[in-house]
Length: 225
Image (cartoon, rainbow, N blue to C red; front, top):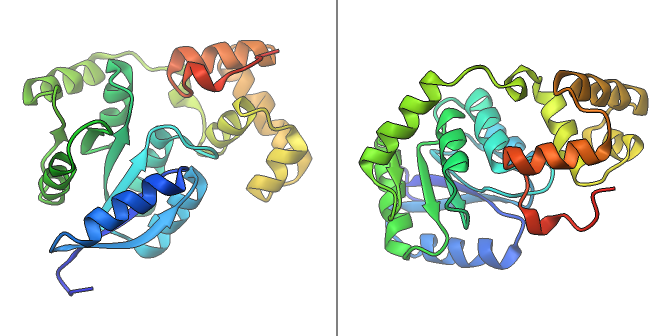
C-alpha cells in the first residue's frame, strides 16, 4: 500500500461480490482495500479499528443493514465516508442513506467506472449518486430529509436497532444475546423497548414494519408468522 492511497473497507455478505470488487479496486492505482466484512456488525468494528477513508457497504446485510452501518460508522470514525453499493433503486433507500450520512449511492448494475468515479468524488468530500440518479436528485433528497418529521425509528438506540435487525432475521432473544455479547434478559429488555417505541406487538407486525421501512427486501421473507 502506498502512503497516500485511498484506504477502503468492503462490506457485503456475498463473498463472490467482495472478491470481485476487491480485485477491481486493487488493480486501480491509488486505491487500497484494507479490510472486508461479511455482515454489518463486523463492518462497524472494522471501520472502528482501521479508520479507512472509504467504506463501501451493501444495503442489505445480516447483523446490521447498510443504512445503520452508515450511521454507526460515522460515529466510530467521523473521517470515514460511506458509499452504499446496492441493487435497489428505491427513493426511500437513497433518502435514508443520505440522511444517515452516506456520501454515495451506487447501483450494482452500473459500470466499474461509476464505482471508481464515486470513490474519487466521495474521497474529495462530494456526494455522488450513480446514473440514473442525478445531482438534482441529491438536492431533492436532502431537502426531503430536512423537512421530514421525526421517525419513531430515529428514537431507537443503536443497540435497539441492532436487536431490531436480528429479530427481523428470526433470531430469538438467546440467539440475539449471543450475537451481541449481552445477557438474554438484556436482549429481551432491548427487544421490548424497541417494540414499544415502534408501537408493534407481534413478530408479524415487526416484519411488516421492516418491509415498509425498507430494512429488508421482500424476497428475504418467507413466512412472517
